[in-house]
Length: 366
Image 1: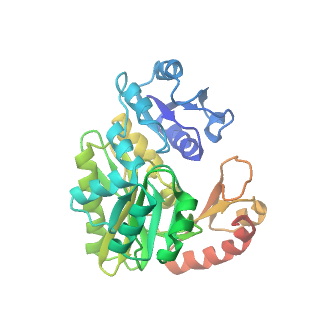
Image 2: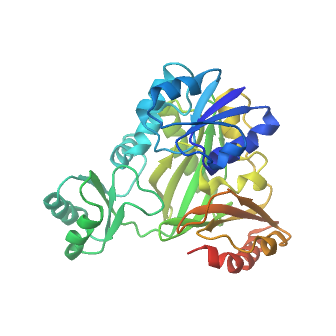
Image 3: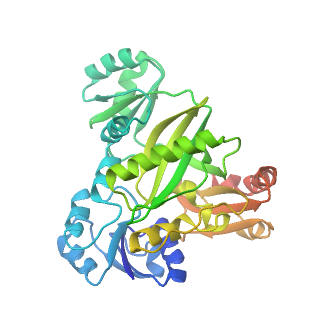
């Protein structure tokens, strides 16, 4: 099988590494030469909307996928007229607009925070009065790792928030007083078979994921089942193929959907060492028509992102339970440069290792 991937970042890199044992070959398309995946397979260096490049890219491929959700939908539709593309363009289109995404969740009976579209600052005043503060003002499109959003604590901050993110279509969401952030990683095959990984507990700082632990502690069978049901509804409605991540807020026994990512996801990186089949391998299995792999965890796992600067890798690598993945990216503030996964027999062992490694990574987390 020959798989084409739109984007050539670290997710593409990890897809290519997972594909080696499956006998899958790759071709990537991305505008920047020397992207992380480029040292593992051919890269077509071109803009995503370059139709001639897309034609060339598609030649000889069996299937196309994408590794981030900012790819133009028009480019994915262009390719889908010529070759199978998974996940389908509609999934990408839904995930790219936070308003459409929330409306989509509500249509499927999946609870979300209260929300409303905002187009003008006068409209923002009215919507904030209706929804109530605190609330989060977000750009409907783009924005990730905390970018493109502003937390409104009260009406006096409206002008400041508008200067920060205004001028584009926006959505205002009620701030959720959640107990923790979770995510469910699911995969659906071409035949409609499902597999689910255990819920993951995620810890963010400055809008960036810093730590994921899996399986999330103190998860009841009912909570896991509810998260799986939400993911199943989404994937069935979209006739989805591949890996999907759904980010959730837990509030008591309630789960509220925050966002979905139609791709392999940062909170699933622990599966490379911590599950019988990684999210990357299962994504490839799904889109190429292979049987899906076992998603059971092999123990307890923690995943720490390496952000901003490169730490003392030699010291980290000497930790007996640490697995280091560096992406070959140049250091820059807030940039994800790699991740470290730790495995243990139980969650206390993970906590101990995370505490040790957190101190070594502290200089890289700014």
